[in-house]
Image (cartoon, rainbow, N blue to C red; front, side, top):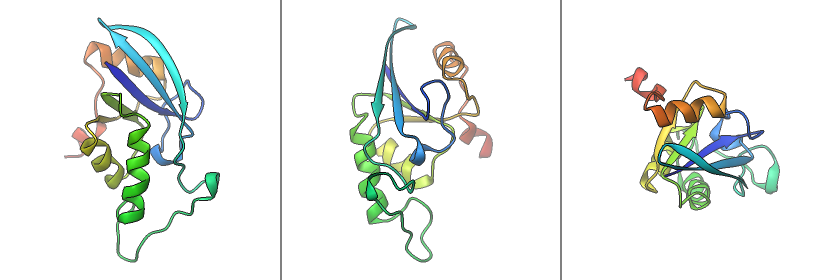
Length: 133
């Protein structure tokens, strides 16, 4: 299984999916971590990276619409070999796009990547969206 975690520094889970500059991709086999790979995100959000502007159509929710859909597709393509995506927070459009790309999305309050991975392997990593229902 491969797990992508959005991160700013390789140690903590980023609070904001769209602004994190990296994916930490972790390969887990037989409940053991066998490799780590840091992948720069090539589809940045409104941080000014890459010269991309972030716009909303009037009355349209955050992360929805044709421009957002194209950005999300690019983000998903970078981790198409992964099974799970872990983030601290994501907009509805991003969640929908990642799930449509076949990723299981987990939004967590845990900040330490190693702790989140341990909880995932142990089956105790809670998806905070479940608490919102």
